[in-house]
Length: 310
Image (cartoon, rainbow, N blue to C red; front, side, top):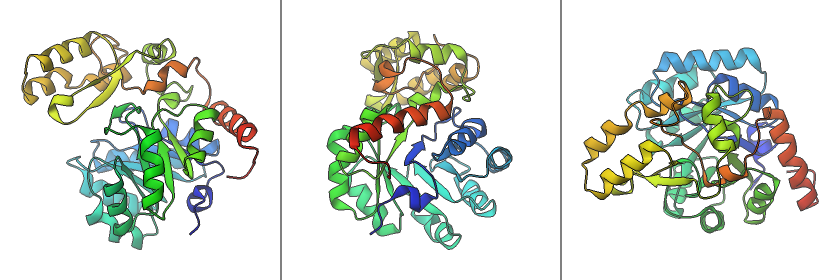
């Protein structure tokens, strides 16, 4: 079976930008796609019409393929699933659920479907449901995570499916890209490094927290609720972890973080806001354009792997 992600998705480089809530808007998605990767618009919990507007704005900025990441827990998932068909989106990635009920409609529309998975069992289930590829995301990633590391998860998923596997979690440079290829991945998904891209709408204070982060500056909240999330440490995370230790209810913890991602991304509140970032944040040292980021990654990976075609 053809394992080339570039041919499957019609892109130049096998690099997918993560569909990060509040971060992955049309500015970032269009810039990544124009630079040769696959930019994603993160639908998160947005309404269908907001997502439609985002798609149309991205189309104005690039003639390259742009995808949409659909969070299946969103109350608007059904409507967004229809919008991507109507707007002739070429690629959809999914998270936080099983996209099975949308698969027939998407496939009939010629959409490539790539679910994010955190286990071999779910990867196999998605292949059987008709997925064109999967993103195997390790717990090094920022945001909502599973329990397996990228290095452990990726080769095991590669061994149980025949569709292409895209590695995610803890990848920010050509070394991580090359390592993923050696594990059998056909491409990589990158989030944290694109958060600080010059085209990213993320507040400068949030970007600076990532740029100045050390290797030990991320922490996982929400383990007690069954919804672990990797973020950078701040006052809010300290309070959250204290409440978790004291046995706070899910509702109390949810109240603490309500609107906190928007606070950090839009308002630059790095004290009370949620600063989603992966463990690789300590490797991200400067703000660059999406083109500079992708070129740098590919140059380093090409040197390490000794090949020019992926």
